[in-house]
Length: 251
Image (cartoon, rainbow, N blue to C red; front, side):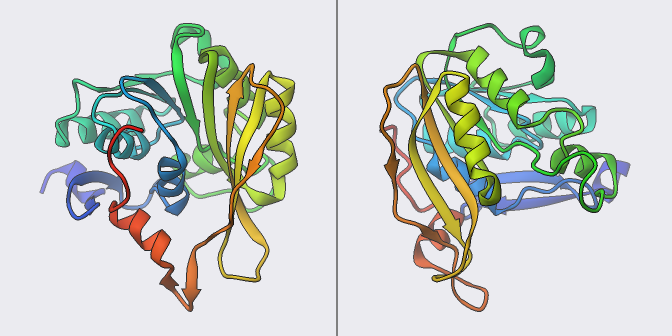
């Protein structure tokens, strides 16, 4: 066992179709990444940027679902970049997925302006000075707004998207108004919204939102997404998302 293997796990999702190295103690992807990837709609041959890609899980899922699209993962942390690139090669997707170093606060240094069809984002959501600070650099940067807040991420999305390009984002439901307001302020009109609830009858925990750069006013509020049917049993819809058994073809 080499030094990397001691600090990493090799995990499989989608029935083994996607394999991912993750840190044992640092940042590990969670359900919100899977829900974001499922919520994202792509057309044939579109170009996609994932802001704060982490270990690359969202581009990997989207590349598996949409085999004619190309992806750029933007990440700040060197260790995460190394792991994401390793995951790209592990899944033989280096011809369609590229991982680059960069930050949303200096987006012009990392990518060209207005050349991408879609931006996806799962931004850090805790204020830099609020809540218990996560142990370890990977978790701290992934969860707290130390290197970029919501507005930084949405401003970067507006910079990257071509006219009529689309943004999809997942964020805590408590800050839903912040998401939708800042999107509109930056010229990305909210068009689809879905709230995620742990159980039927409970308050929403997350918001999934899609916006169009330069889009017209008018939003579709989708039926709520319920995660658990009872105890810790996933609903059929969420179980199918986790299993990767949903539609995999460009649409």
